[in-house]
Image 1 (tube, helix red, strand yellow):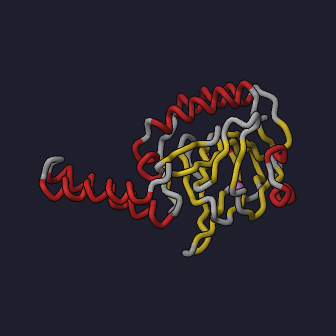
Image 2 (image 1 turned 135 degrees about the vertical axis):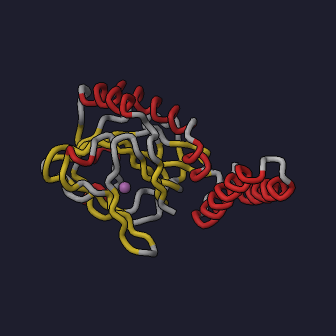
Image 3 (image 1 turned 90 degrees about the vertical axis):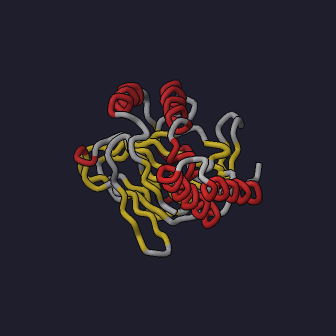
Length: 227
Ligand code: NI
C-alpha cells in the first residue's frame, strides 16, 4: 500500500529544518548506497553522522510518533534515523529496490526495511522534475508532494527519482521495520482500523459492535505482530 501522509511537518518546521540542513555540508549521495544502487544514484546527501542530520532527524521522528495516520499505517517497530538528500542540475536516481537490511553508521540501528518513506522539504513549484515514481501491481505512480507531506510505500517496490531539471529537490528519506512484516496484512489492519474509527464516531466507542471489532483488530495484530 502506498499512502500519502499530509502535514507530517508544519510549514514552520519545514523552514526550521531547511535553515539548518541548507547551511550544513553535503556529500556525494553514494555514501549510503549498496553497490547496485550506487550505479543508478546521482545526488547529494547530508552525512549520516552530521550534527544537522541528527538534529533534523530527531525533529522528524518526534513528529512521526505523534502522527496517528502514520502510526496506524506503518505500525512502526524501528525507524531508521532519517537521512536527507538533494537533487539539482539534472541529478536523478534510476530504478532500484532499496536494500533489505539497513545498518546505521556506528552500528546503533539495524532494521529490516519493510516500508520506505520520502518526506518532501521543497515546495513542488521550487523545482521541475524530481517526481518519485513507484511501481506497484496497478502500474507506476508519480509522487510530488507539498513541503511537509510524506509518502509511505513498501520497500519491496521498484522506484526511481526523475531528473531534477530546475531548482533543487530537498527531501528526507528513511526506512522502517514494521511490527507486521507483510504489506498485505498491514494494509488489512490499516483499513480495518480506519473503518472502526468511522464506526466509533457514528455509534460511540462503547457500542457493542465497535467493541467487538476493536477486539478483532487487536487479536489479528496479536497474531501477526513480531516484536
Ligand atoms: Ni530507494
